[in-house]
Image 1 (cartoon, rainbow, N blue to C red):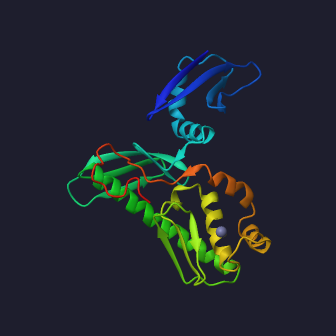
Image 2 (cartoon, protein in one colour):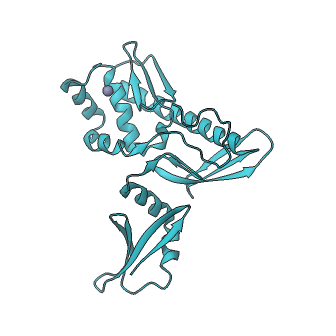
Length: 240
Ligand SMILES: [Zn+2]
């Protein structure tokens, strides 16, 4: 029997599987269908799905290959989808990112300033994260960095001959193992400004699983899209 459930605007098809040889109920994806595997038929399967909604949404987006950093009412942070809730607040906008319940609370007067405040906060997190990671990795291979910046660009990172490196301003939205690879890649360019075998050897030293992570990186779409409904007049949406 197959059914569907809508969580935070995403409709996920699911089916129940009853198996005698197991003890605990568990969830897994078969393609884009969520399987609920249990010893007895569940009376309220949707309740179980909703209880594990962060896991369900994250894995659903992964299997369907749709990993947009920005969506209506949702953003990614460190590879996990966070539900965004806006509260009316007339003063200077405030953003709090709560990892315990995967929620972002933004207090702002309207949708545009709420969106802008979230982008600003993510940008700050991205700079803090990438600067400290890049400096640690540069020290590991004995090179100096002249500056680390974040930029709103389609690229994940860039490095120039003056030893300045820059990262995508949304790098902190990636899972940390993948952003670690992105940082490793740019830091390795401080030694080798090309993609030679020597370059990839340095990347491997800094990020041993770089081959898998590099592939996974392709699933993520860093395009800035509206988090809220009423975004007319916001200058940056849809532009790079
Ligand atoms: Zn490169």
